[in-house]
Image 1 (tube, rainbow, N blue to C red):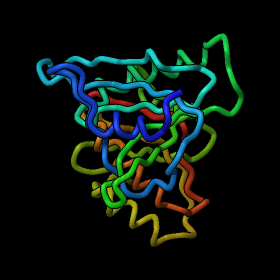
Image 2 (cartoon, rainbow, N blue to C red):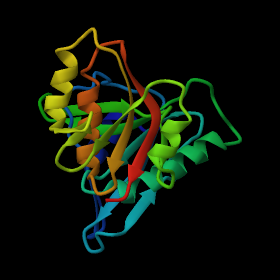
Image 3 (cartoon, rainbow, N blue to C red):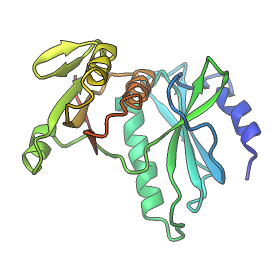
Length: 216
């Protein structure tokens, strides 16, 4: 098992050869600072073939916590199918350990250290429409649709920051949300949104663990 320090050094800017690079997304709010008993996976950005994706998963052990390191320049269209494959690999592993989790690795530039966002229970959907899913729900779920510029909430377009601030200023107002992301969002943009949502501490705001990726 690699020590966390070595993983940190490798993850900040990992380069294999002349065409594969890995630059971590930057976030500011996640409070998860350390994950023990880990094994890493790397999803690279190819500087010579920007539409291609390359995965290095040779160090993954199914009985450990997984740290998934994704280059921030990749789009969700590129990255999420690979993430789904990793999730299926762990769920179908012959050797399992109760309680192990999956995390995205990111970098906090303010403290100059790694931070992590858990996605163990997230189920990504790339071929199912969110409308079909919402019809199956018993709760009054509201769809949040994120594109590269804003979020659509109650038929209004807001910046993500303005939307999160709106939730914070109405602490007694309950919501149940389903997240819907444009497939051309970069992984940096995606983790920024997820990181901002972590700052909403209102227990009456619930977010479904099913997330949808739609074609722009």
